[in-house]
Length: 165
View (cartoon, rainbow, N blue to C red):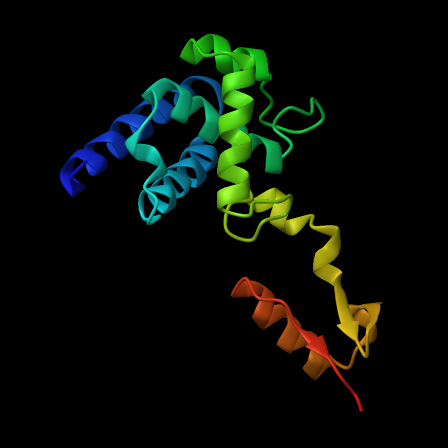
């Protein structure tokens, strides 16, 4: 598959995702999902080159939803896996397997700095923890200058640890 064909496939997947996000989710999920598709499109292995477009769209929503608690009723927006599969006409196991493939390929986890919603990043319980001499401590217990170093690193999606010896 040449580069233009891959770009066209990416855009078709994004268009499918856009329709779902407009109808069921929000602009933030659309933005995150679009960035995820584009990142997949830059992978050397070109995972988007094969497979059904609807499966890819459902799997991207599923992957982003999984790390952002989309399937938990206490979070907003909320959707079910069945709702995603019904919308895209995909099977639960196919979507779940492709979602897992995406999460593994991009090393996605809860509170991911690149693909988490704003509320997930703000409520990240790990954001206030830092390693000092091999011990996990609350960043608020550190001197202000070290707290600022941690905040700046986190804003750049990095982690920091300190050694006092």
